[in-house]
Image (cartoon, rainbow, N blue to C red; front, side, top):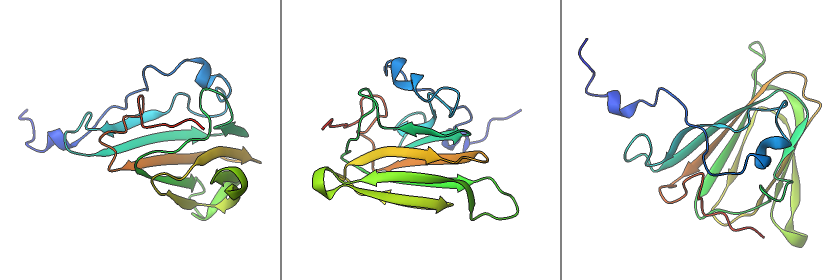
Length: 161
């Protein structure tokens, strides 16, 4: 079989983050994909993508961004958080209640999410934690880092507060 000239644009197998302590995922194991699946990480495995793409399934109440290893932080690139319910009849049905925190200090705000939604986090905006409550059916969480060639999910431009 001849390989397609466009095969270089396909990532067929997710990567798992390397270099993040296993203890970072201890709190969420058994409630979400931990560690997440990484399909794109800056320029890897598809050259020129300049994007980070990670996916996680959430199936039980849990929280991310509340441990010392994964605290609220900011990046030097924009991010998009996509929260998708899995109700095939009603795409708006998230099947959970989510709290996503944006901002820091007195500027911090809780964003309540209870439908399939997208949250845009511009470069430099502190974000997390994300708290998943009343999860009644699996949720797909997709995080996209835009213009993230220098982000690299492992050594990303995290600036702990």
